[in-house]
View 1 (cartoon, rainbow, N blue to C red):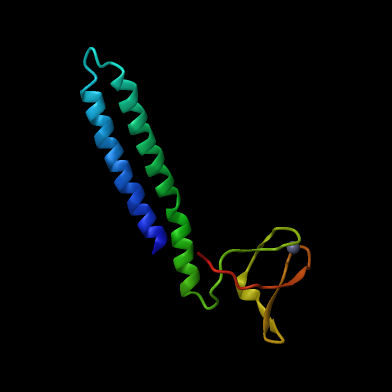
View 2 (view 1 turned 120 degrees about the vertical axis):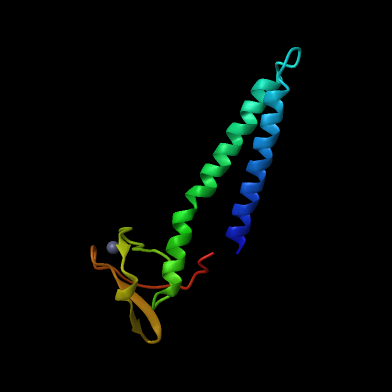
Length: 116
Ligand SMILES: [Zn+2]
C-alpha cells in the first residue's frame, strides 16, 4: 500500500514538474532566457523520478509471487557466503525454520523480518 502510494506521489510530482518545465520552456522568450535551463532541469528531474518509480516494478512483482507461495518470505541470502537460497528447502527444527546453504553448507535459522 505504501509503495503504491509512493509511486502515485512520484507520478503526480513528475507530471507537475513536466507541466511546470513546459511552462518555463514556453516562457523562455527574451529577456527571460534563463527560464530555458530551469524548464529543462524540471523535465529532467521528472524523467529521473519516472525512471526510479519504474525501477521498483520488478520488486513489487517478486513480492506478489512470494506472498502467494507456500512460505511467506523475501529473497533469502546465505549470511555466510551470500548465495541465493531456495525458500522451499526450509526445514523446521524445534519449531524454528532453518535453511541449509547449498554452496557452503552453512545451517542457519530463518528470522522473521517484515517484508516491507
Ligand atoms: Zn552459504
